[in-house]
Image 1: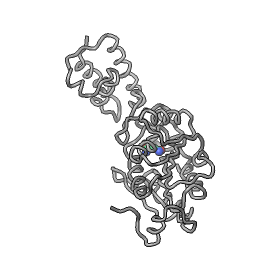
Image 2: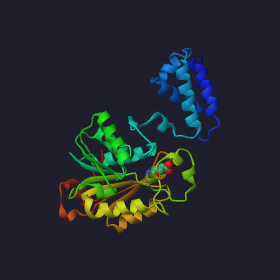
Image 3: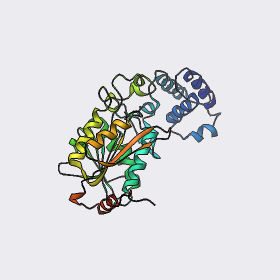
Image 4: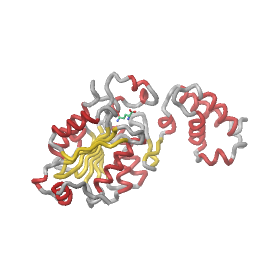
Length: 306
Ligand code: GLN
């Protein structure tokens, strides 16, 4: 029988032919998944032997990975904002750069107690759940057009023990309860151009097209969200935050400006690429409970700087 160490070595060799893979890490992740053990277990028990059944299952897992199935779909999980989330082929695999959306959202929510938040196209629930983990006082509506994705988001929320989320199936703001408005609307929508060769790389071919592609210029979803959010759904002084492609910042800024939103700013992700653009409802005439946002707007300062 093979020891853990031997099995890992064989798997690493099998996975080394894969483009953009990290054979050592992936061999370990798959073995941990099989054994239901943390990575420290592999270092602690290198001489431990796999049973014949375990060995066969390990070979099967490695074969799936060799056939380019994303590691997150094989293990059924991915970490985001230190939360362990379950994912499936109906949900986009959460990306590290999307944590920037969470950071910027928390920044704008600093001075709002019991904020009302909407996460549009929530997928596995990553953004909504990260915000819930930081802001226990928030009320969060998570939407998705895919029933399967929404079920996964709901399951993740239950597993984490959160009670402040509601789930709504439908297209962008149309899914939200009628008459509700939000202090903050956040979305990582599909934004890739339909014929972008990037769609053939890495995990993307196996991820839901619905979560990736959005028309010829990649901006269909972003256009719909900006229009719907600015017209009906942002509270006076409320913020809209969008993730987008690294070449889309200017176009997104123009769309936000045309929709009458202000205080528009783009922020770079960890790779230094313009990734998140945010804007505020300038509809201050109606007042609303975000009086300090209104005030900070009048004196021309961003709120909540500490
Ligand atoms: N950032 C992802 C990628 O290019 C796409 C995610 C999205 O479309 N929202 O891999």
